[in-house]
Length: 277
Image 1 (spheres, rainbow, N blue to C red):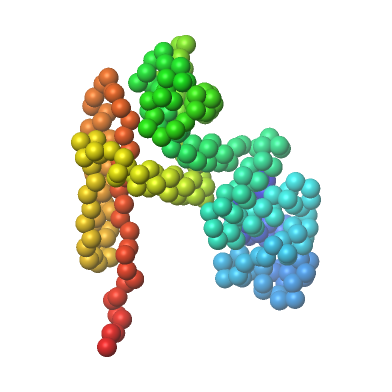
Image 2: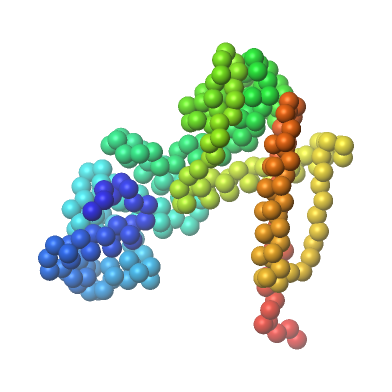
């Protein structure tokens, strides 16, 4: 059975633990529940099936029932906290706690680089800007940014981007982009990206009044759609985004960093099958 530090879903770990015990000898859900302190003989099975969830209060008992102690017990408790979290802040907090435990016990990093890259507009912007300005020092890069960033922050960002493999240092104050894309687990990446979307949306809001129509382009349409139309629109937007990236990549000697936002969101509830007097 894999180490618990390789799991990001406590239900999968519970199921694997049960299957392993069952394979090695007589073991039942009733026995598992009894050892964990549950009166219901099927409770743990319902948890594994996603029909119930393990509470924060009961997670230490379940951990001990599976023989988890020390850092493994703490990891399991954070695993439960992550899966049960209902907001991005709590999910991120639990994930980072899991990563810290994993790092301390020489297990692969989970998602800290993904979180750090997406925590601020400064990381993707500096990643694009630095290769355009060979020989520029951090202060030079900072002064070119429309939003405020200090020279010290730029220095730290460059160091992170190189260390994480998003930039390659070609020489003194000269950088090139690597082919590496920003990746993370399916659990962490949506959390990180949502934070970036919020920040970029705020920047877009400021840009409406900050820049002239010669420097920025805003347009929009409000329309009624069906579920099928929604799916087709999403596909069209995705294709358009890829085309924009392709156009930009055709040019050398780049001179400025831009951000493109695609936003499609509901303004009303679905009214289908609702009766109105």
